[in-house]
Amino acid sequence: MAVKVAYIFSKIIHETDDFIPTENRNSMVHALIESCGLLKHLCLVANRQATDSELELFHSPEYLQYMKKYNDEIESDDSFGFGYDCPLKQGIYNYCKEVAGASISAAKMLCSGQFQVAINWLGGWHHAKRADAAGYCYVNDCVLAILQLRTAYARVLYIDLDLHHGDGVQDAFCGTNKVMTFSIHKHEPGFFPGTGNLSDTGFGKGFRYSVNIPLKDGITDTPFVEICSKVLSEVKVKFDPLAVVIQAGADGLNEDPMHSFNLTPVGLSNCVQFILKWNLPTLILGGGGYNEANVARCWAKITADVEMKSFFPSAIEMYF
Image 1 (cartoon, rainbow, N blue to C red):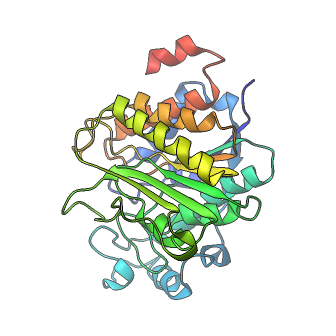
Image 2 (cartoon, one colour):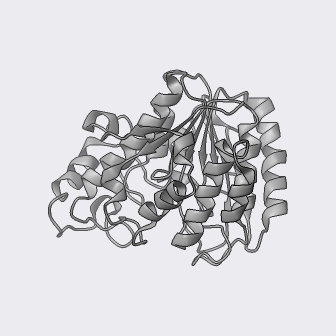
């Protein structure tokens, strides 16, 4: 029996140039999902912008006001981490409200009990801190979604499959035992963000509730999936999560400009499928990925594997 899947759609974002260093990744991802005929098997949920008060559940009012001030301007200084990889651009605040609103909306779909899986490929901005932008991330929609899930589920597990360490999410919850964070990522001297050692395990009530798997370049699908499945099996037993958030960044794929991991869409999708076998309310978010065609194929495959293999598996294999 197919699970009921909510798919968050934002017309504004899909018709707007990306604010991350890709030209049209968002529209390409959605176009491929649509062209594969997947939308008719998903429950499309129209997005809404997050409110200022919702953003302030994690981000500082001063940080948000500064970004809002430059929403319709171009000139700014480097306060709050803006500049270099997070420049302030016209419309950025409204764009961030769309991204955050999409992940919050997806989390609310799960909290309602009407859906087992919710997908927001626009989200996954896992580097943003309470009052700092970093790594192309201006607001941390992952954290905001987890806070929403915590209104209905006592324990939430965050799983980060991105090439980069999910530092912003870990920092937000490293002192609590109500949210466990798991991140498998590249970790080498000089590689952003430079965090996520094996010894990085949280503190206070959150001691041992941060799990990090640092890797070097070159890992392929088979060992990647094996590591994830073995470690996450132990995490599930020890933590007993009631809801899950997956950040499925695609910058670890082969041919990505990062030139680091050697994964394929099959490997990432297999990790997601392993987690979905737990039959827990699960939110799936996007993340990194700078080869637009690769990202579109990967996230379309994950979308297909979540809901569609029982409907037309032969058609899916044609695309992937």
